[in-house]
Amino acid sequence: MSKDEKPSSQAAIAAQQDDEMDDWDKRIFSTGCAVENTKLTDCYYEKKDWRLCKAEMERFRQCWKVQGNEKRTDMKNA
Image 1: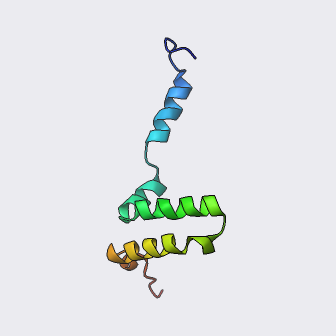
Image 2: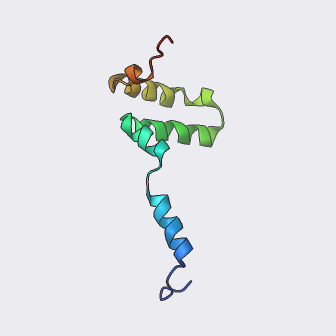
């Protein structure tokens, strides 16, 4: 596509949707640990083995604890 051409409406809609946060992203950002989550996910993607991402997992766990997210995920007796 040349710089004078405009993207089709479908392409424009798809690009706009890619820029919007979905529910999953909103939940991750609300934890306060989005950066640590991204680093952990990237580590796994690169190494394909969670055991090789122990440092990233520990940083995520510490962030989770500092942010008080343990209260969010406590199970309640039904």
